[in-house]
Amino acid sequence: MGRAGRSLACATFLVASFAVMPASAQDLSEKATRAFMEYAWSLTPEAFTKPNGETIQIDKTKREEVMVPLDVARDVIRAGRLSAHAQVCELTQEQADNHNSLMRRETMSKKWTPQQLVYINQLHLTVVMLLTGRVKLVEKDDDKGGDKDKGGDKDVVIEEGAKQAQTCTAEQKQKVKDLITAYVKTGPAAPTPTVAAAPAPESPGASPNPPASPAAPAPATAAEKAPPAAAQK
Image (cartoon, rainbow, N blue to C red; front, side, top):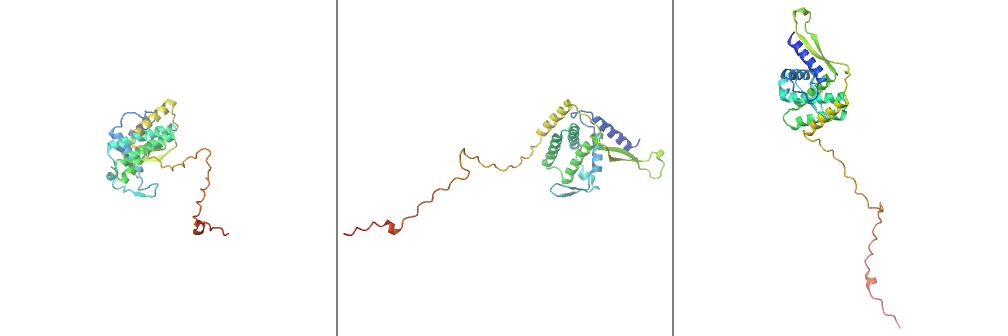
């Protein structure tokens, strides 16, 4: 079996194992981590448009400039695994909170280029898609016109697949929820949304439109100030 075939077998086993492993399982091996990193890189787009309309260009010929260290990739894969379990358990809000917490950590660390942040996001997404059956790994012959029995190289590609039926017990659901809550608490706090100040409450019985204060009397004229003339006899 060639290297591609061994990598495929390794990744297929990992996907099957992750589907039933608890989210707190021990770390991945270096080989397994690199396998996930490779599949994520193959899915990383050449251009990514952010919600604010900004487009980030990624040169796919400069792979090493976009890759992240192995220990960081492991952290991202752990977070992706939690998100996958949350999706299976239909914990929509917790899944979003988990992903947002991951991206806040990496963004606020100020360590990564915009291209690396796109790759980190893609690695997380790839793990979720693989573990929930959204995509599948397929090994295809790369031998064009040659003899397949001579051990020609094979390409490993990722194809969209039907969502696999997975179950989540009440106990598993609570465990995943608790793990995500703990993960979010250890990361940077989410920004507090700005809320407009509410108007001050009115006093009971107060009129909504209080009457205007009476106008001050006009100053007296000179004639009005003069004393009255004495009466003629």
